[in-house]
Amino acid sequence: MQLNQSQRNIRLWIDGNLAQGNNFELSSVQAHYLNNVMRCVKNDTIKCFNADDGEFWCQLIEITKNKAVAKPVKKLRNPETESDIWLLFAPLKKDKTDFVIEKAVELGVSCIVPVITERTNVKQVKTERYIAQAIEAAEQCERLSIPVINNPLSLREILDRWDKKRILYFADERRTGKSAIETIQKEKNRPCAVLIGPEGGFSDDEARFINSHEFVKNINLGKRILRAETAACATLAIWQATAGDWQ
Image 1: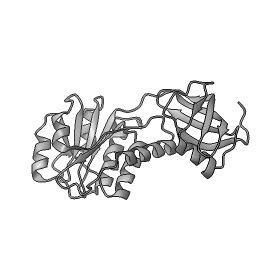
Image 2: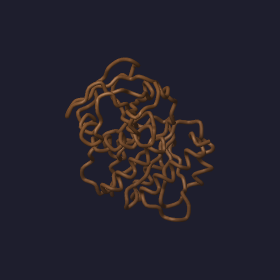
Image 3: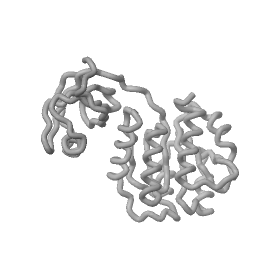
Image 4: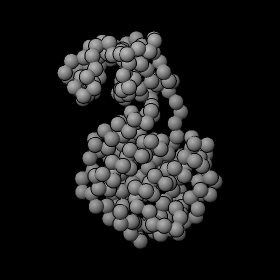
C-alpha cells in the first residue's frame, strides 16, 4: 500500500482481532472521535494495534456518527516481548494519578495495582478512568500493549497474596534501603514490582510490615525526599536503564 493523502496520523488500540483482511468494528467512542473530532471519511487509513496481533494500517470502509468499520490492509509491526514489571502505588489526587498512569505506561509497566494505605487520601478509585488513561498513553507512545489495571486492594491484602518469586522493590522515603541501582542490578533477571507510597508516606507500622517479607528489597532513591509521582517515575526509569529495555 502506497502512502497517500488519506492516511491519517491517528493510532488506536483495538480490543479485538486484527487479522489482516478481516473487517472489524471500532467502539462507539472511537467512532465518535474519528468522525466528529478528526473528521475522518470513508477510505481514510489509520493505525490500529494490540499486543496479540501487532500494528496495522487499517482502512475505514464505513464511518458514521456512532459507527466505524475498518479492515487491516498492511502490517507495520509484529507483536513484541515486553518488560515484566509492575507498579503498586497509593492513588493520589486526580491530576497526579493521571500523571503516574501516563508515565507508567510510557515506562513499560505491565500491571498497575492501586494500593490502599493508612494515609491514602483518595476515597474513590475509578478503575475505568485508569484504563482509559492507560489506553490513551499507549496510543501516544507507540506501545503495543495496555497494562493490566487491577482493582484497588489494601496493602495487607496485596502482600498476603504475593507471589514470592516476584521481587517487590520498596521505595522507602526513610532512605533506609540500599542503592536502587545496585539492588536492581543484582536482581535484573527476575520478575519484579515497584511499591510507591501515598503523599504522606507509609506509617512506621506499614514500613515494618512491608520490610518483614523476604521478597521485599528496600531501595534508596537518594538524599532528597521525592513526591510520590516523582518516586514512581524515578524508580521505573532506574529499572528500565538497569534491567529493562533501555539497555
